[in-house]
Image (cartoon, rainbow, N blue to C red; front, side, top):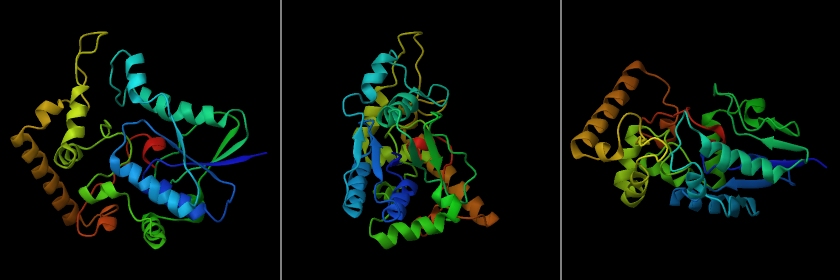
Length: 265
């Protein structure tokens, strides 16, 4: 018997897809791979989604969160070149949950996205893309979320554009600044990981080419804010599509399409 599985990331697209598919596939299984380093707003959002679905979302990684694998990898923090977090905290738990059963995996890639969907290469898992098949774009996702009452992920209120770990290395500089301002305790916890890697003595940083200690200096934070405002102004002048900014109303926000699909959809 074929299983139907939809992976929630805590992001807007997978949430909208769960809502969209609720009455279309009644036997759907909903899962969330919990790194145990998610934003508090992400856990709040999952509860909203569960209330709407009327089903429990299975939490994977109940025993082995980020810190377990961080120790296994000798204290080396992940990066876009060392993405052990995606493999061990997202993909492996998903494949273990699936086992050898034939599975249709529902993925929330939209019709207006250029990304390719990488979820799993196991032959018993078939990925399908309902939004792409039905031509649904960002405005449609916004409508699904608002009409359902689930709404947008709460972290978008303070300018975060992605779900995933609070220290995700794919964050933009401005998002690190906002994390520092909104959740200073989480910023400090992220900073604590930036210590010498025992394998080489090198210090790896979450944010490209600068440590969080450097980034959090008042003058540097102000510079990042100025650079961000200039980028917004240039986008307005070019009359580019506002993408995610349309969701937030009057603020221009870059919808960052880099990163791990399994983490951010």
